[in-house]
Length: 198
Image (cartoon, rainbow, N blue to C red; front, side, top):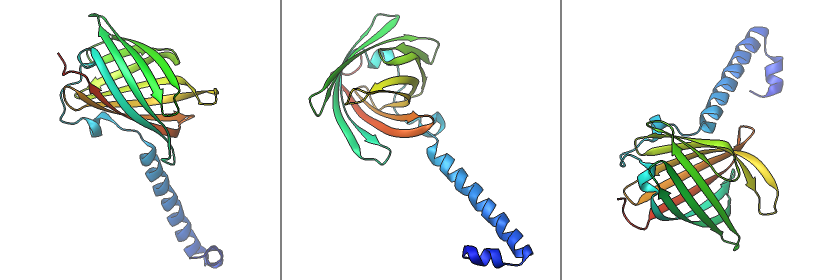
């Protein structure tokens, strides 16, 4: 019914249509919030092996990925080489990034186990500590990060980072990047160990 017709409707019909409009708005908001909700362990734990970070990341790993903006346009592609070392207490990840335009970046993560299924980590750019929870074959990292744009600007964003171990060599990673609670993009990475886990 056009808006003009709604305004000309008898009071009782206007009341009924107003209630319907509120219901439609509430349903629309619920759908929007559900669409914005990130992954959860309930929906994402699959049939892969249990994810032991200290085993998977101990060694050399290569990864390939794309960063897409919220409209799903590919903004950057990258390759990452990771040399990981587990000393029994600390897991150190020495990461080298190469982007499609030739730009490079280095990041060193220092991770430690903080409970049966909880990890904490630090790296340059991470604000405070990253917190990771492992359940089954899935790992979820959450942290704030000072992201350096290609033009040199620094933007503080939130990472909701999900990793899914597929077998003893392959892992899939999807990171949701947001600012002020609104998604600004997604980073998808495909990891492969040089050798099966020991």
